[in-house]
Length: 193
DNA sequence: AAACCGATTAACT
DNA sequence: GTTAATCGGTTTC
Image 1: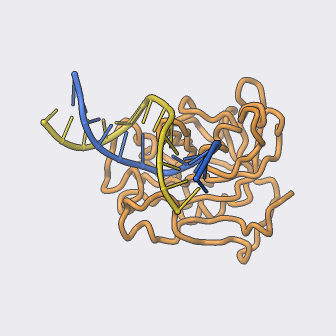
Image 2: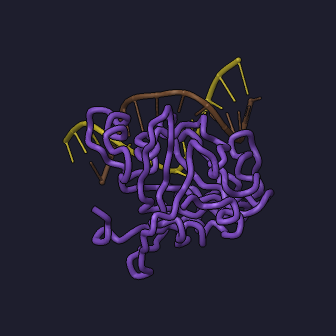
């Protein structure tokens, strides 16, 4: 079933990042429904987190949606090419978010392959999964309990020992915060086929 | 108004 | 292991 607004608001980014492993990310774009099982996430803890866009309370046009109440999408363009998808969590004015870094294709794999182009259907990175699911910046601020992008519990259980925890990727600029164990992923041997 | 840069990827050696 | 591609957001002048 679809995750409720309360699910997002009652968890901080760290707990949410763990709990979103194994959940399904759905989109319905242009009448095409696609979905994937979330296999990798990262937590961004807001003001005290130097790796977060909201570090030090920074508030700009781009990251404004992080300050809204949880249960909406934060989508932004990275390196001018890649759309990155985050789930905003906690209450209003607590700018925490979970970056979805990888999914395993579940529904609409042909549509995903088409969106990815002639290449193979791989959704193993934060930029490639958004391309496969059709997520673009127009979904920034989108309600995750709505009809265009949402998450569901599809009954996939991931055991604690199958979740690998480590430092986040690509945040070297964040100093010692780059070493925090805020990245969660399903052990490669446990990937659903 | 202009410079700078990034929560990345794919294609290389 | 390295690096070019690429452009909106942010910072700086």
